[in-house]
Image 1 (cartoon, rainbow, N blue to C red):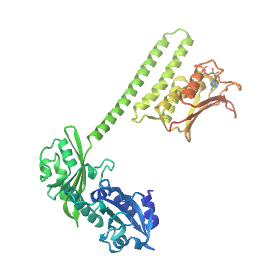
Image 2: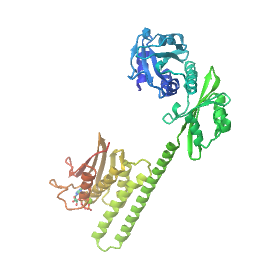
Image 3: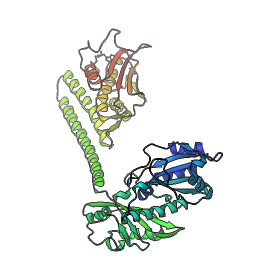
Length: 480
Ligand SMILES: Nc1ncnc2c1ncn2[C@@H]1O[C@H](COP(=O)(O)OP(=O)(O)OP(=O)(O)O)[C@@H](O)[C@H]1O
Ligand SMILES: [Mg+2]
């Protein structure tokens, strides 16, 4: 839960929908701060003693902040903030006449009630630093007028817009470019950045004084949104430039006064997104090809082994085929998923199935089971681990049950920042004083080298302890 929700619940006893309404204000009020050149504070009121608590704070991008410190959580007596208290009680916007000097600079405060179901559930203050005020330019006048319109809408419950869908991270801000439209779509003011965004789309007509219908490349949705007093976020693309437009209707008692259109050139952003998608597809394609190539190598070896006279040579090639197929399995999984992560459970199950098909003698049935879960593993862990698991399973099938069938249990378990892998069989077992280092064969040597040097973990192969058989335990640290 965010601090806003927590504070509103604790200090004002609000729950559910009104809290969501306040969260919606706080997620969309940057524009009000920017247009007002003001800091914004949101106050909640304790219904019992009338104390006021700051539950959210927003600083403007367009002016210097008055409050260096974070005020969220600070509580004031009702009398310390008379205009906030009045806005709560009277339910109308309170504009203070005299500046407040308590922060060391003259601050003019305006308190805007936030209504919900005919009740004031919070008050938002606009705190403007008067020492910065000069003779205002047309830009400043346009901003301040729009800010007043938005404040009125907030007090009437018409801002923020319910259900407006916007990509908040990408959404244009005031500084990105702003146009003010009248109810018919004529631009009464446009910031230089807004004009530049249109130039980039190849629009050379006048923007100011012109109707969007004449110069915008896709004006219908804009005009429609304007007529209906609905918000809109849409993109236009031309000559390799992409411009995102966000239209905010300005209304007064449901009567459309016009609209603010924020525009932002997002060509680079969209180009990067497309590039990422393309890169993703390329990486998957490469994994797919690597898998195919490995399978081709495996088939070549298989073909070759059929022509060999010696059983030993044929077995050796068979081993290689199995090892190569285990690697191919990981690449195949990677080729199906755009993230460079593999669900290792799937890989382990496929390895088990692969061995079950090729190697198990029907007279000595060996049942293999997988329990637990390794979750998602990065490719650089999954590939060596698949090889290790393949060696351990192969050994169980090959050595544990010379004259009868049995069970092999594979356990995968996440332990904090590690992964535990156990392969356990109830076969003949390895001798008590047996060690990997002393063994001259290849399989476990490959496995322990991979675990220790590539994965930075440990591998132990030992008699199962409680009962017959062998237990192979691997513990790997996982990258964060
Ligand atoms: N699960 C097991 N049960 C009984 N003995 C095992 C088990 N795992 C390994 N061993 C013993 O350890 C030896 C070494 O295993 P390792 O995998 O290194 O070689 P290998 O299987 O004989 O040959 P390779 O794996 O190179 O084909 C095996 O020959 C076998 O005697
Ligand atoms: Mg082996």
